[in-house]
Amino acid sequence: MIVVTGAAGFIGSNIASALASKGRRVVVVDRFGTDARWRNLAKTELHDLVAPEALDRWLEAEGGGVEAVVHMGAISATTETDVDLIVETNVRLSWRLWSFCARAKKPFLYASSAATYGDGNEGFVDDGSLAGLAKLRPLNAYGWSKHVFDQRVARAVADGAPRPPQWAGLKFFNVYGPNEYHKGSMKSVVAQKYAAAAAGEVVALFRSHRADVPDGGQRRDFVFVDDCVAVVEWLLANRQVSGLFNVGSGRARSFADLVEAMFAALGKPAKIGFVDMPAELRGKYQYFTEARMEKLRAAGFDRPSTPLEAGVRRYVENFLSRPDPYR
Image (cartoon, rainbow, N blue to C red; front, side):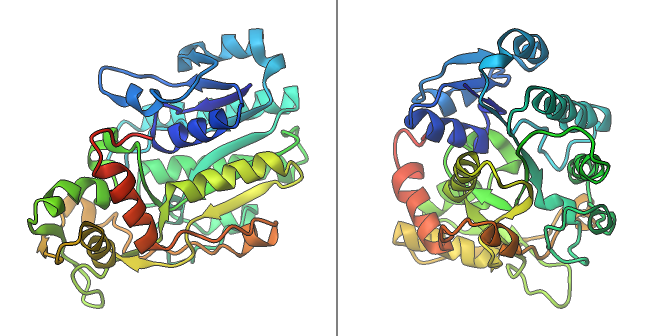
């Protein structure tokens, strides 16, 4: 059994689907609530479903049969203001799972985030040392919580404390792709703007509030979700690899590029307009992110990243334009 937390969510459901399709027994840990996120798993064969609050008891009873834990569960909204809730979910639960995997000698893969890099002034090098992590200043509570856990892992490793036989923290950059539809304002721009683009309407992007960056010229490392799944599958197949790794395309592209790729996939001329960024976001906004991928490549992961235009086209043609857009 492979335990996947957050498996009803975006990246987690894509991982669960990929593992199940290869005959792995997938145990889903998540809350489904009253929305349609159950549809993210409707096409996936599942071995068991466990509520997060029941996970400790489940592991006590069934943990001996667990092969690995893939921990994607988190409060990922950068706008969440209940920091106590964020800490309980993103730090304390993560540490309980780390401790279980250390005791039971099971691999532990977990989601970190590019939000840990803050404004990017210190670059985007996935340095997992205590000294390297100490330089980072996240811009929101979500990024801070992921950073806290990265630091706790680094301290355990530096002190020679018990650890899982394999562990990997994955600093996901701007992921897009199928099964993100429940994420509301946290969806990728492609998912948020597809309906307008398909209708031939103007797609609105945030204006830049920096003189050195043109409107629509804010650049991010956009990564197709299949590339993230491929990293997880590769790590599960290469148990000798541990560490903190960036997961991105390695190439920053502008939001204008992203929207133009979406219109091209639809066979329509691009129509882009601009609106002011909400004042509450301006001090927390990343104008540039770009994953340094050398560390993961040096570890042996050699699958090429999906180019932006190819990933957006695949997303539009195979999912967003279909009556059933779920994986």
